[in-house]
Amino acid sequence: MDIRYGFIGCGNMGGAMAQAAARSVYAETIALSDALPGQSSRLAESLGAKSCDNDTIAASCRYVILAVKPQVLPEVLGGISPILKNRKDRFIIVSMAAGVTIASVRAMAGGDYPVIRIMPNTPALVGEGLTLYAPSDNVEEEEMAEFLKILSAAGKPDRLNEELIDAASALSGCGPAFVYMFIEALADGAVECGLPRAKALLYAEQTVLGAAKLAIESKQHPGALKDAVCSPGGSTIAGVHALEDCGFRSAAMTAVTAAFKKTKELGKPASD
Image (cartoon, rainbow, N blue to C red; front, top):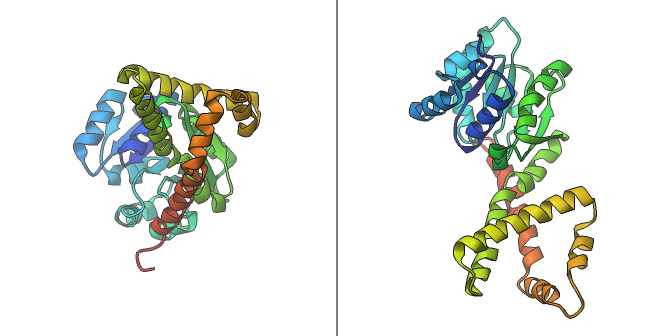
């Protein structure tokens, strides 16, 4: 069976998306490459995929998926651009490099190739991710539909105008780290109140999971859901007041805007 989906980069996000691909297509059609060969070979063995090198992926895969950091992308694309130029068949470049535009990917790759820009997040590992995507105007509908099978296996895909992806990824891409800090902090507070650590972590995790699911399924504004928990003179409103005193909402907003600014910096060419 021919390899069709090639992942260059098998780190946290590349590995997560490769695992999603293996849940949605035949593993034998997936090829993996990484700067650390042992990393790609171990993942390939666990998935039943093929471990190879960047050149093999660039020469033979229909979807050339670049799962590398923006700082590394120029080197990777510079290395495979002669191979891409010599191809006679159609292929699609998929980039998940933060802050790097479709136009920049094309410039580094050396051609007006079809490009799908994506920004997944780490919950893709458990099929609960959010993947933002924006195709170039020369990606055909059936090509996008085929790749959406992989994105759907990772969680929820959502199409977005490319100019909004950096702002959205500051929330969805960086946001899991902020949520994990919140979970840890909730558990720490409960431990201080006397709850065993294992129980505190479990309760914090399930509380965040359940609250998110209720917000999604009820379609109510978060403020309304918060108000429903805050009884007059009760313990919840006292806790909300404490969060406000500590600048909780301002800190969360600042985290997202700081991540957005950094994403924009990462996407700038090194000469800027």
